[in-house]
Length: 154
Image (cartoon, rainbow, N blue to C red):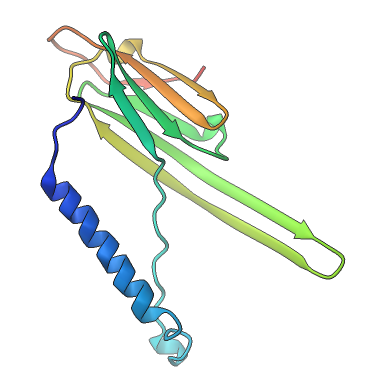
């Protein structure tokens, strides 16, 4: 097992989803009907990459789906007790046809911190990035002291 189950974290996630559900239901169509000063802007949702994390006999492996993100926009930090993946998403889509023109832009940053339940060797961590999938391999350590290390993607 890689991390300890925290029922309160799941309850917090459930609470956030229920709040979003009620906000979407309540404000859909009503926001435009209100006078301009009383319109409420609904905050955009924060995107986080989906992650698979598993343990082998000698390492912890993390796979994160990061579609459409450049390798240079990803920052990985491995601490003795956690892994932090940070990045920046930038999309610029443009469609031009004979009767219409559409341009969509989206951008933002994300951060995902993953706690580790076993001691690792941060200085020996390796990362690869291929076809939008980031794979981080962190060797396990025998109990003792470890230090935080920045990991370069190969």
